[in-house]
Image (tube, rainbow, N blue to C red; front, side, top):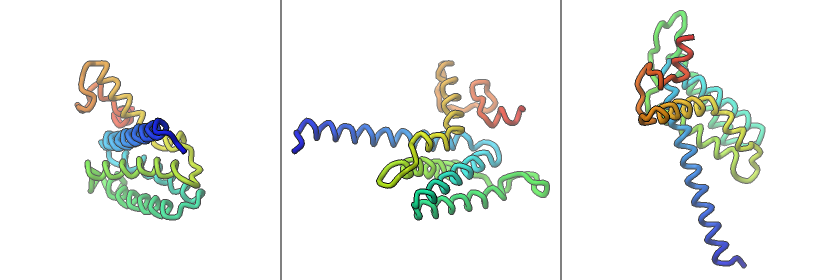
Length: 173
């Protein structure tokens, strides 16, 4: 029989874990939203991430997650046909916008948790982090530069030296 102290510690641990997961999902959501500033960048990165999540779901025998990841891949691929520039298409015809980037970011964060937690899961949490490391690293580097300069970490000024997003580096290279 568990003592009252043990139950209290377990409840506290679950509460801390819950807030950690909320923080992690919000971080992925924000990082995908910050990547959405150049035609096809957030969509392309998300397509690769969902492709990896589909592969992990398939290899783990998680059929519902596999089907959902493939649906997300197909939806993003369809979006990219109208968002990327091709020789026959000089500009984007549709945009992801905040609603699209937030939904994709939430789904990526949810998948990172769902594929690593629970019975029968074989995907290590650090591997789930590596799937979305590019947008997370971009987000953390920009926010840390802004905080060191004494500015708010969430106010984006286009082409500011403190806002050297990956997309600006790609454009100027």
